[in-house]
Image (cartoon, rainbow, N blue to C red):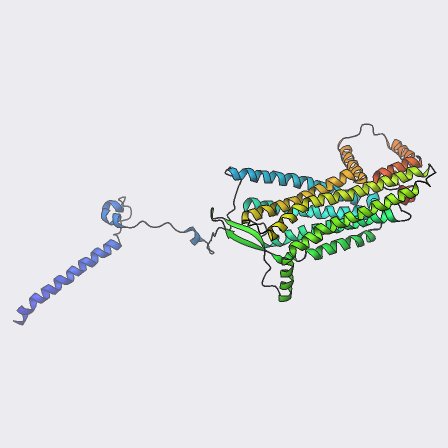
Length: 470
């Protein structure tokens, strides 16, 4: 009875276990498809179409997984290109590039020519010409380093060299303004001293130590006055709401990591920067130049009135007329530099004062446009200054033309060149020429009276008579 009663239970248990084994077998086959014999050409999807249909496709491998350091693209490499595709914005971009190219080319060539002329010509190495060469040097720095950075930022909305360029570019620009300001003051003082001196001396060739001592005053003062610009500017990064591209700009925000005393000093400079720039770099050179010119003209008129009754000798009149002509030329040079400087600096100072005190609401785009125009005017002034100097100053212009003629003669062979004996006879003829012809050549090259250095030239080779070639 016990065996009969227990047999149905065992049968039920065995049937239940076999049912579970079959379910597990099906599940295992679903997850692990059966092996295909080696060499079989049949495909898995033909044998088990149902299993192949319900399986999910295997995702492609991530290429970043092959690298030890994952690549992250947060948009920092994306640059705005206004030149392509061609739209209405592209025309303004091409105009900016064309204008910048013209200013860059003219300014670089003019400033380099002016510096090379003063450096290589022995008879042009005086304080006056070296001051003009120092102005040309800083104008060259502004054009060579600042102009490409500003144009690249305007076109691509990105900043070359990041935070470093935001500090260096304003520093170089303000230093250039300081050098031009103090140079105008120094040249005006020189004009006033030359006119009011009792016995005017010819412009002599000075030693390098004396010239460097005078230039160091201008350079050190300009660098010190521009040093707060290094601590006041910072790079500001934003994202464009229209294109989603990153935007870089430079903001006047003193860093909070500075020491407390230095931070307060930079903050005070930031608050007074507008009036400081207007007073020191605009009003000071113009008022100083105007005052010196008025006093110089007044003294010159008084000296002319007193000298008219006593002028009897006809031999001294040509020298006096030549000296007066030279003084008027140098005076016109200072006035031309002051006019160009005022023309290019007045608009920026004017709209800064208007926007600060009139209360006109101006958008961010308008302020950026005004800042760009102000920088362009600075670049135009740096490019136009050497051109004006080469056109007005007779000595610099003649030396520049001599350099161009020397370059042309070196490129084109001279068929009329003779043997060494003929060249020696030519040099002997030049040395034995009359003193009047030598004086005329010295006047053309240096623009000054040859009495200061005639004793040094008469024993020198014939090449030094017309100046050292460039």
